[in-house]
Amino acid sequence: MRNFIPGVLVGILAGGFLVAILGRGAEEKPAGNEDATYDRQPLRVWLGQLQRSDPLYRQQAVTALQDIGARDQAITDALLRAARDEDPDVRILALNALGTLTPRIAAVTPVLIEALRDKNRVVRIQAAQGLAHVGPANDAIIPALIQALADQDATVRLLAVQGLGKIGPAAKKSAPPLTERLKDESAEVRGATAEALEKIEPGATRRERR
Image (cartoon, rainbow, N blue to C red):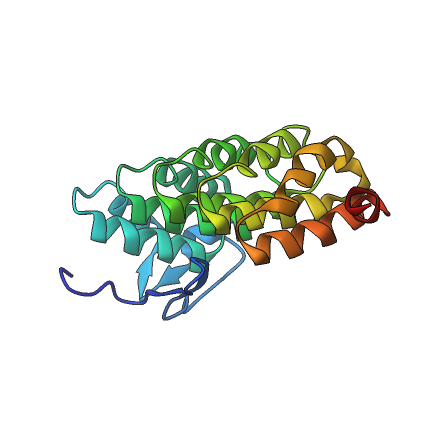
């Protein structure tokens, strides 16, 4: 347990994206999650393992909960608590699970927004990725993504730009701060910004360059 977390494979690309969290797979996924298992252990074991003092056990537990699926409140609540864990790797895994499994649950959005201010860059990356899945229905998303445009990490800025572009015209108030990113030091961010502005305010990029 000290050297390897069974069932966890985390891939980080050079840009900093968390691209995969793979487990052995839940052997059973019956209608009631309370009877589901991961690595032959029932849900209650993994929920209890989140209380262990060793962060490696908590990391494994979060991976198990994601694999089982967030179809009931107990799992969602556990992942929300794990997203505020003292260990950054636990937070990263929990945010990834929340962003992919339950992004439209109202309680998830404040946690993702809070994580955008985390000291750990990969935590912020996961938060930005998760917010992109929430969509424009939540009024707090656009201000949070606008704030992330000024993040010191280029990957976070890129994800914020892409998230605003995905929202489209509903993110019109983000056009002025987005325009500033046309001068970003990262060529990738600059390119994504031009695309986002066209989705939000067609013709805005051409007007800016005149």
